[in-house]
Length: 437
Ligand SMILES: [Zn+2]
Image (cartoon, rainbow, N blue to C red; front, side, top):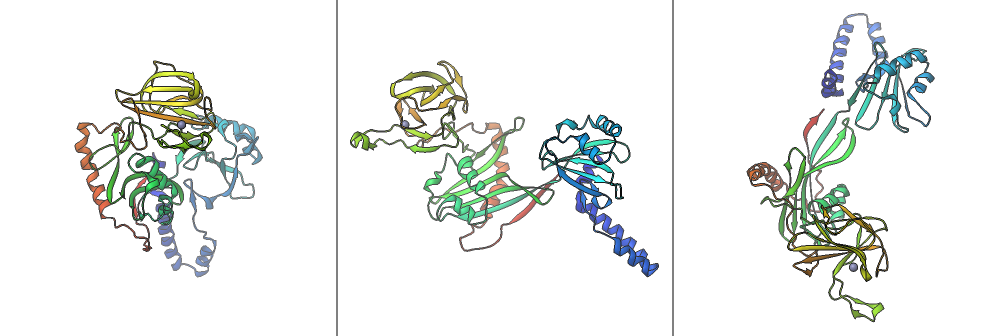
């Protein structure tokens, strides 16, 4: 617990504290012999804190775990005898399993600042946030600690001139943020391929930093606003289940932005052919061959997912369809997935949204690996990309009041952000919201 306290204080706090101490010391020195104080100044090196240690107190040796390395071998190479190594390993084992060193992970040895340079501490970093300290300078003890993590809330705005990615990149923003807007938040409400010049966005998000300086990516999008075709689209992230940590994006009227159906039955796919009742094919002499499905091209073997919960009503090999599965979701909707390499589900089986029901193949009548996704509404095939699909789980009635309270200040903040027009070069507003751990 103490250690946490120190980490929380942060290196800066400690450095300031020590600086204050050294200033007091200097003042005392002024009253004494001038030569002595000069000598003092000459040996002072700035304190560098890492892992809760003043690195200036040690000879610091850094390396990464190499193939064939072991905890024992590293210490042995650094002049620690086997009995002591055994002892250290025994005492540290409750905190840290020395056999779990991974090749390529960094470690640091803090060694005595003398000619022998005997290791006093072994520090291992299994990931960028955590470090394990095995301290054996006095009594042997080991502990795992975390580098301080800082979240910085940021606000970004922009106007679309060509496409959404450019609109973000032009502002020096991460493309990842553009993807989050297009594929996660507004995937069901706004067709980002049809954005128009002048559409605008605002977004409130948090960036994560480790140890104050290491940028660890976008942590979270808190809220967003899109002006699409002169119409406002708000999105607020809200936790609907605090136990299971379920969150979703809802609009200002508490409507879920996610739909009951996934946008695509395969991930990382590309639409190779859209639903088109007027399709004509050269191969058939430009005869009318309506395409009542949406083709998603993906590599053979790519898992195909049920786009919504439902019951399998057909699973078979049949003619041009090849291996296919059909699911009934409710009285209104049914979906079908064609040309599978292999089917994974049987008739009568209940499947949940995202469950794998088969794998992409090219069975039946097809020129390349893809899944032909067919979508029925009231027994008629329609274009799912143009359908107003049913909302995913709404906010429960008893949470609604809480939701409206929750979004009030966030919406006010969104509304107050001036949209940065193309030419303006003002810097992004930074706003430190919290310092955790
Ligand atoms: Zn098709």
